[in-house]
Length: 614
Image (tube, rainbow, N blue to C red):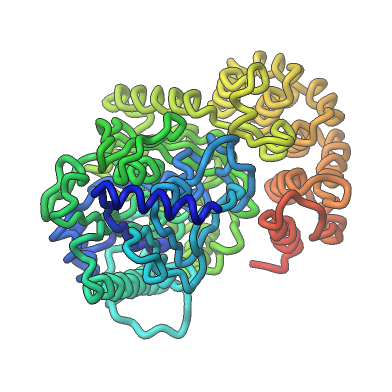
């Protein structure tokens, strides 16, 4: 019946003389704007360069998240990951009530929609999103006269291909420009050169798809996009929400027949200053096919009949990365990049098992342990990281000089800080909840809907407490102590985390309240309090704190979210966790969870703590 409805809609549109453009998306994994058309002379990307020459590119495009699943989640719904609850890598939450993924809109407009072939959403996919989503999906299978929307995703540039050996070198490692945050070693140079090689591979794959459209005689009827899903697969690029991890190429081509739908500044060879990001793609697609984007979409249409004025800022985010918890938000105005670290006690370079398979990561860490890195290179591993970071992309494209304390940049800091806070409140950022608390609060519905139910999510107070905790100012200790006894567990959680971020004197001041919090009804509060006491408390307090963490880490007795959080805390304790390490090694690596996407992370942490992985 649905298929009949779509065909009738298409017939009605064609009968009225209306037509629709074909839309082709060529997408690649794990590469930034390291392409000739973006001014990178070392890159070899003739096909995308040629597409940009006859089309246009956006100089500043952010993927919103520096990792695939969270970025694609933002893209498919037109809703930021921290707004939908899909900010973690990887995770699964319900689709917000009454909302659709963008292919559903396109199919209702008569499009044949195919995805070849990666999905990787952190949102439960509704029925009827794609006509076909598989390695065989292709626009050729559409009905006669039917317009198509087709994605071809190229995995040849994925992070895993950087470290694949043996490899036949094309780009010379000796000619690589090593960014200032990376050490200049043979391993790093080889990884960077191999990265450029695999970017050339996906450029060739894109060229083959473009040639296929040309042979079919469809170039004049097909709007083409090329972009990557986040920054390069190198460490401190992928997974980190600075410009290095979020900046991607975005090249678009509108044939003459369809240039009335193009961005207003469109002309062959133009390099647009408009700020764009993945959250803009869903409303842009709808605008291109004549559908006014719904108000709930959080991006800005940059093409089509419903183009908006460009946004003044782009936003990024980092949540849990595989087995490692974190909470970072970022914003740029195109020149400055601001990062707000809500968990500054955790380093940028937390041990994500998958990331440590790359040679650069291992040699970089070894040099840090030896104490031979420059301050710019060591910052990736050091703790605490600054609560706030500010970088000037014009003067410092590698983002190594933090200007957050610079008096000359105080106005820029204040402006971007205010924007980050405004945005968190506007999108109802549920990522400020501990992951287990987010799921518990949202039981039976989506986090997005929970956050908008009256009285259920005191975001302003949660945000204020997270800021107070992570700024680590001693004058806030008394207020955090008060909030440690708050009626809302999210407030208590951030208050307890605030004492973990501080020192022994602060924990001594809050001793009684933290000991009481070891019995809190919510696991995340118990874990945070135990973490603070085990790290900064008196030796006499440590057995009770460690016992609390061990119980929470036991997947058979807790949730997968509690186990992940507790094991992260145990790892952070170092030698202070020694009395329970033998028991940790015996903990179960399997257990119940809401979705299979969570299931490998507890095992990764236990194997790491057991010394089974480097």
